[in-house]
Amino acid sequence: QVQLVESGGGLVQAGGSRRLSCAASGRSFSSLAMGWFRQSPGKERDFVAVISYNGRRTYYADSVEGRFTITRDNTKNTVYLQMNSLKPEDTAVYYCAAGSYGYSQADFISWGQGTQVTVSS
Image (tube, rainbow, N blue to C red):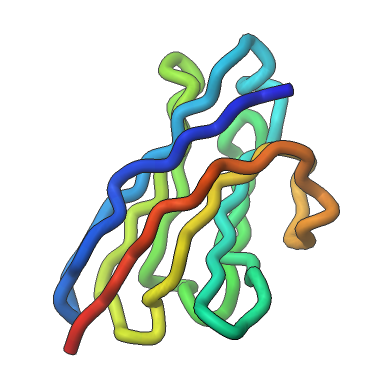
């Protein structure tokens, strides 16, 4: 099983930017799609973005389209989420996941522990 560790969360002012990182262990990273999900208190864990194993395909939730960018560096076993023009409604715990290319939680088999992103007005 691939182990994932997120980092880069913190407090950001509205309109600001933040980059999250997800470091993966093992040798299978380059064969797996990677995704980002987020969860706010009292809400379901929602899809944010996904990137194919080779980085050639990406897909975003409507709520972040045009503001967030998912990238990966297979030489470093790391996936990133660049977040720009942040809004208070982006406040959530962000989770990194590994699996197949999709936008459902069921498409992913390994999950990180999450990193908190708080956007203040």
